[in-house]
Image 1 (cartoon, rainbow, N blue to C red):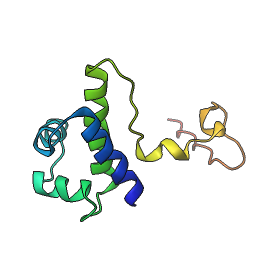
Image 2 (image 1 turned 30 degrees about the vertical axis):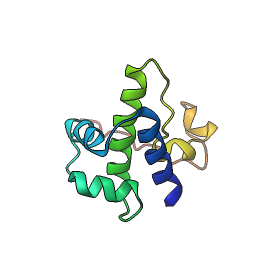
Image 3 (image 1 turned 30 degrees about the horizontal axis):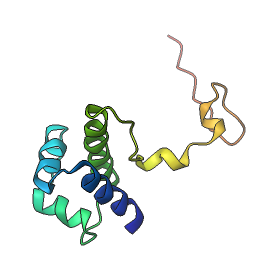
Length: 103
């Protein structure tokens, strides 16, 4: 899982954010880890949960947007989207949603 962490750390450096500044943004979005834990995630000493990794990605992407940029930091599920996920009709490999019980 070194690659996603490299993406987060590289984005932080590109933005010129300190770890403390990134942590404040992460915390403002509802992140519950300490600044020390965030620093450990960025340097690969700890493995971030999917939720924490995505909250960090949101914090970084919001800063990119503030500076007039795009959202270059991918979210966890970005790589798992297939063309079938974009259709409104379920396919054979996607579960059909159950019908609501009638009253």
